[in-house]
Length: 441
Ligand SMILES: *Cc1c(COP(=O)(O)O)cnc(C)c1O
Image 1 (tube, helix red, strand yellow):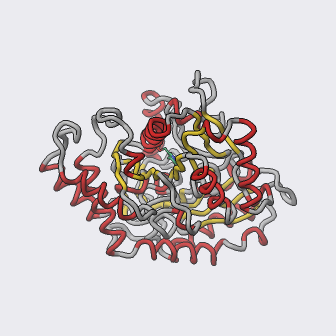
Image 2 (cartoon, protein in one colour):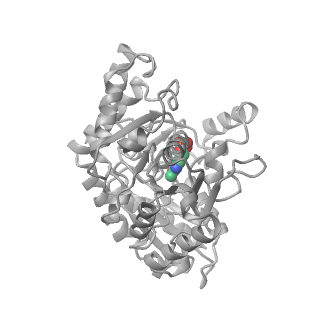
Image 3 (cartoon, protein in one colour):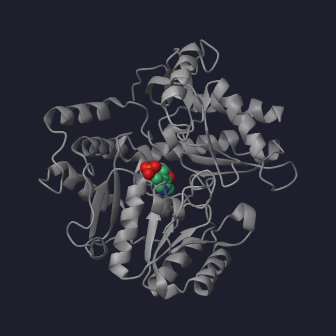
């Protein structure tokens, strides 16, 4: 792969620099405070795993705009595919007069999602919209109303999906009324509950039986690896038992792969890390189109086709330019073996930061798959979440040219989600910056 920007961190001003600070002043006069920002450093361009800000600083991106630019920033092939499509046709609305890109994306999704059966898709604009559509489809198919989501889940910020999102602050507080028939049930969180996957699943199932009733449930939503919830990876066996319970009770089992899907964890979809578990529906979004807005629900044809024509859709869904970008992303992932690259990043991160829990008493656990890692920060000698430590680490990182993310219901998990094309040298340099912050604590 060739990059248009050197793959090295290089600072020429303090961070944020003077141009970023000037933009920040304008922003405060024009942009809603509700769109909170992790680091007020304004970006100009990027390539691979490097972002270049408006002052000319080169920063290491360990966040990918929350797992979106998995293939690297401003990939020339994505840019070419999108610009070619933009000069041919930008919109017809698929549900007025269709076009081939949409069909090709649906064909590809049927091929790469788990399960050996006929699958159909609907394309929409955002992750939350995909989750909402999966809810509508599952309710229509089952004739049931209750929707189950896991503790620590993140499913979006629309009215329906913010209620499926676990924590009240800041995602939900003060913005009700909320929809009914949404239930949060215990997840398997090995670092915190110490349960085996089977034990945690029995706890979850018992909760559903005693609080909701299994035959009331239309759909059970899971993130196979919870992203915003803190890179929570349920114990082996958990999803096997949950999927079995769903099948036994006619519940649609939905894997929300919006963050962990599309090559991020070294497989097309992160549920593949749980052998034999095949979701009925899968949602895709973030990494699917290199930053262009596109999301999808894909699943068993008989479930996806339960909705009457006109019951799902939307003006911009499956836009010609976004679908052209997605086709280029699929092609790159295959041609450049980006699943293998994600596994390379996993080995490099494991080798570089895997021992932090032994070396730093504020680190409770380092866990991850592929290019998706979490470092859970705790009060020394306990498992009590340490959000102050995370704030200190993030502040040190951003002022030194490393963009990493926060996560976790207690804001105490450092989330590391670089592009899968990041080099070992950049991982090493970024880890050194993060270690300086951990040493100071
Ligand atoms: C980001 C995310 C969403 C919401 O996607 P948007 O495009 O922001 O609406 C839903 N589910 C998961 C798992 C996500 O990470």
